[in-house]
Length: 346
Image (cartoon, one colour):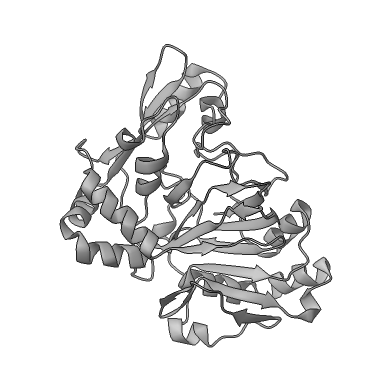
């Protein structure tokens, strides 16, 4: 089990000193709609001429400056790089290798999303249909095992829509505490439990359609039951051989090593988006004591998250890094072909 929040953090400069630290080879630029959170969120960088042509130069640049890049990421939450000559999944994989961080294998994760691997490190972000919105979440926060960082590469931008919305969870929690203090208190004290019905075979029409065999990396019902028991889950086999699984109580609010508190969970995505032939969205998550979430509180939380959202508009070749502890992400519906690839880091 990965327990990143208990780890001792690296030495990180203050936010202001980090803002003043330039990354050689790129220039910070502005996009309309960025959020002002002591510094602009997310941080947007455009490559200078020496990085525009050669992937070997780009790979060496990421390796040379990885500590500065990762430090900025941990403070600002999300970084977008434009103008790099990333043209394939192999190029994206090369960048990830040169960040020199341990790979978080999607195959071994407990995520319910259907994804297809391109390389050992790189896979499709989500196979859900284009009209399906994927709501705000921290990656795999509905499980006891989750990555610390995410990377996205835009292989093909859609004709319309398809942005990746981003929301800083520390800012969200602060605003929720101001507007909905009792709800925040219950989240903090009770935690959350998630329930999901996994199909026997992958359901490509659902954003949560990964089969239980793939999700749990098992072949038999007996192996599935053993794996879930080890993780503290409750389970029920349904007549069609789908698997209903309920998590142990998981924190809704976490404290980062630097002291910041974040709304780290899958609450919005589960409550609004876990809707398919097997699952009823507003029944998919509850407080740790089994009590229900109110529609009124959830409408408020969702509204606040949208107020604080920045919709990252994709262009082919874009590379985004997201701190999974600090930033929620999602996917807007789109028209046309959209191919955004992902990679995860422990």
